[in-house]
Length: 398
Image 1 (tube, rainbow, N blue to C red):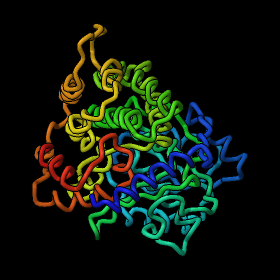
Image 2: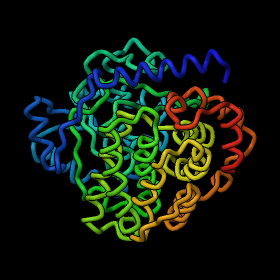
Image 3: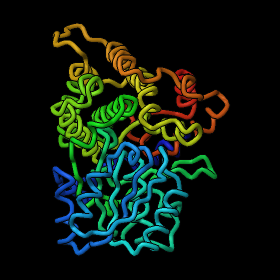
Image 4: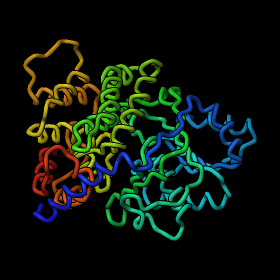
């Protein structure tokens, strides 16, 4: 990283941290059950809605309760279920076309982060039809009011229901673009634990770890504040205590509720503090190799934690206390203990342990590192990071 870029990055970081308390962030209104949604829609005079989801969610029957609730209240709906694991500009265009064809009045993002991000991007395009997503890429470029946007998460992972961003893949360029604006915050978030209790372990595990990583990176961010710390610590407490239990038995209602609430706290924490190198590096991995976001993050976390250990100011011990299995009080803590505990956790949850296991090769490392360096998340990583650092981190994760 050259000197001019370093100066720019640090100036931007300080300015953004100063401005954060004055930006128009708001928490979505939280509703506890899908059954309550029709009343909200009718109050808003929205009798025709677009549901954006994916085929896996529909095949599991997770949309059935929502569809019954809408039909029972004479609310028409159209379903776009072609969203892929890392939603693309094509997904957004297809869903946008369906919105206009069906003359919908509200958008429901139903599923994991992919479906919710796709829904946000569609809403942004409807609000600004003359601008492409590439033109909206970056911070605070969407200023117009969006259609009524409702987020219904079916995984305890992404926190997208409380964040002001959408990440969309441009497959033509092998690039993930982020649209970040407070207009993208959903008006309502439906946190219904029953929806995550049908997840297979293969989805519950990496999405749960993804939520944990949101809290960890927000907690370690140079943009962290007392407010984001409080959200992150509560998230780590809830997820750390319940993720093994939830993945082992998704029908455990208490664990499911704790995971869903923890995920939301984690989302709020990183909405304020941002993330770090794990997310900066995982987005190119997903763009180039179509690796699920939670899996890529889980693999990269121990590598990045080891790299960031030099900058630890005592927070690694707190994170360790939240996530390790036993309640023993550790007196002689070392940073590598957290790294090993994370590896142990992901292994217990049957998540791949290296990028090579999910098909990543050295071929695209230089390009991925260059894309990662462009991410705003690198700016708030606790240890300053160069292009060479990112290349070496990718190689270490293979």
